[in-house]
Figure 1 (cartoon, rainbow, N blue to C red):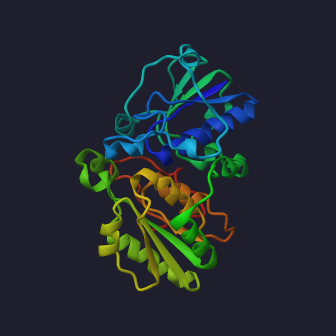
Figure 2 (tube, helix red, strand yellow):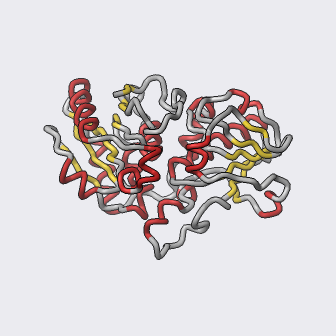
Length: 300
């Protein structure tokens, strides 16, 4: 059995699942997910909407993993670090904290040794590189399909996206802008980045239509003005932003911010000729991300 620790928003959860799924498939064993790091385990509504970002959103997808029980987890060392502590505290490579049991990620650099770990392992980290799972890409695209078909406005937009040369733009703000602690680590992409990417995309793509997604959709519509057809998508809100991920993945091309949410929206696009643009500097802090961005993406 392989267990992968799940925490953070949907993008982080997908990386954590993908690394665990690849390891479990390679070993021919069961994969389970450890949800002890989540604020909300069952996905039920929260009174504090600011915490909705952190509930278990993989449950909306066709993943192949059960939830680890307390008995499953009892055999593993329970020491842990917080998400932002890890981001600031990466100082080494893979750290084996208990032989044959729990493995904590050392930094963002891809380490091929992770792919050779044995059975009865708990993965605890972010694993933000497609190198951990690219050899099962087709299986993951099936796993990350949605259980429910789009309805209403989402169905209307999905059909519209299919008919156009659609390019998504993800304008990520929220805590990256408004929370000093988060902003000091992550930073954020400014309007100039999005404009430069849109202009470059328009020079490469015939008759593009830009679909703009954001965790602050009103701000994006007010301030991001492009000289091309634009559709501003803001109806899903924070509680249902996994539906935005599906819409992004239906586009032909994408402009990703420094966000795992849009990273996965871009990665899931099926167009074999897709053009994906992303920021050269993913973090404001000094963190090595050379393995984070796929080699065929355009860095701006």
